[in-house]
Image (tube, rainbow, N blue to C red; front, top):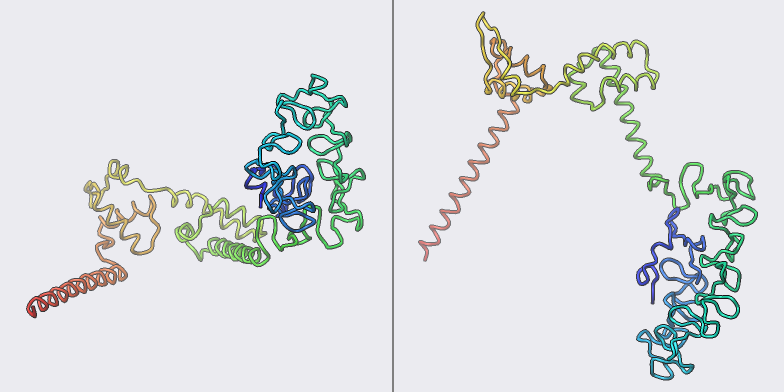
Length: 378
C-alpha cells in the first residue's frame, strides 16, 4: 500500500493540531482524495478508496486507473502504451501529446497555445486559475471556500468552523466558549485538558498533579527558609548552601506571598551579608596579596594553609567562600583552631579504604596459592 507521508514526501501538506494531523488543503484529517496522513481512506477504513485504489493510485493487483503497473507496462497491450496509444509514464502519445491534447511544454495541439479551445491549460485551470468546477489548485472557489464550504481558516460562510465555533470561540449551540461536551475551540476543557486527558504542555492529570505537589513543596520550603532566616533560626551561610534563590529574590517572594512585615524587615538585614558570603574565593589572588599580622609578626599564608583550610570547611559541612576561607586560614595560623584534625566521617572513610585495599591483597594472595597448588598437583 502506498503512503503519501513516506512515499511521496507530502509532509508539508499536514499540520499537527491538538494531536491530530490536519491536511492544509482541506482543513480536515483527510486529503482531497479522502486519505488520512497514514494512507487510510475515510469511507472504506482501508488503504483503498471506493474504486479500489490506494493513495498512490494503484489497485490491489498493482495497476493504476489507466491499466499500467508500477513499471508502466499496460495490462492489455503488454507494452508501454495503452490501447489508445498513450504511455504509462507521462500519458503521452507517440507524437508527444496527452489525452487533453497538450505536449510536454503545455502547448495544445489545436490552439497552438497554452489553453485548449475551452480556455483551460494543461493542468486544467483557466487564465484566472480555476478549474472547470470553479476551484483553484488549492481546492478553493472564487469566494475562498472549498468543496465542503470551508475557507482556508476553517470557517464556513456563516463564520462557523467544523467544531461549531465562531472566530471569537463561541459555540453555535451552547452560545458559550465550550461545546456540548465541555471543550473549547482549541479542544480543551475548563481544567485545561483535551479529550485524551492531555494539557497544553503534554502532561496528563496525574503528571500535572505531581508537578503541582512538587511546586507546593518548594513553596512551603521557601516560606520556611524565609521565616527561619528572618527570625535567626538559620544563618546566612546555611541559607546559601540550601537554596539557589538570591536574598533579593527571597524578599520578592516574601512580599508576593504576603509574609509579615517583620519577616521582610528581617530578610533585608541579610542583603549585604549575602553579597559577602556569595563572593567566590580566589586562591591565586589571596596568596599574592595577603599578609597577616600574627603575634606582631608578618606571616604569608602558604598554598598548603589554604588547601587545608578549604578541606577543613568541607569536612565540617561549612560554606566555602572568600570570607570563610580567609577567616579559617587566619584562625588556623593564630592557633585558634586545629584544622589538621580529621572529621569522624573522614576517619571512617579512610579506614574503609584501607580495609578494602587489604581485602584486595588477600584475594590476590589466595589466587596465587591456588595457582601454585595446581602446579604442584601437575
